[in-house]
Image 1 (cartoon, rainbow, N blue to C red):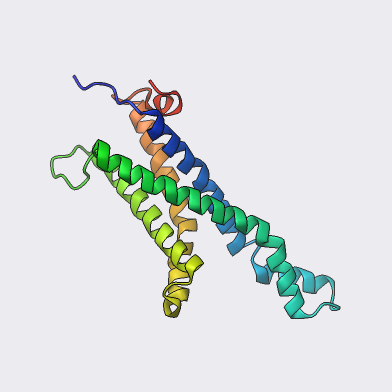
Image 2 (cartoon, rainbow, N blue to C red):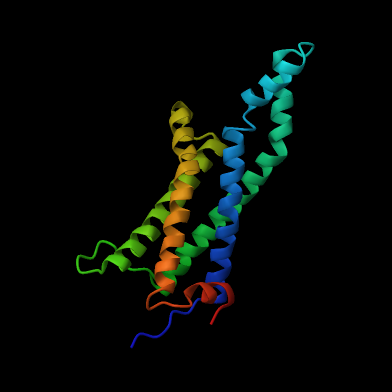
Length: 186
């Protein structure tokens, strides 16, 4: 019989740091792209007054959303550090998720493995493109890099659905109690 899965305090801290950082990154990115887009804010200002020059309106819009963007950058750093720590932790403790590329893997475990692969690939791409944008690397490809980075607004909800479906499947199968173990330990 397989022993129940144990999550160390370090594993749980990394999980919950990432679980908190991801929605903050998603919300701030979503707001910057849509409701708090500088063009949107500038349009609102312009609809209320014509006394302010367009350049000043753009500066006002950037100033309004700057505190929100600082949160995005702070939590991006938290996410990157937690992600790197988790990768190092997995390498030293051994990978703890099923290999989805193994041909004899049951569907449930293959789905779990692909969800992890999706997550790590998603976070890696978001981190690399975010660093490239922040540090102004590869400026000739800036638009393409920003586009790939913004795909996170669409990729994150897909991951969340996969994650919660996986939790539900685990709770109704042989891994009952896995969610409570991730919250409170063994």
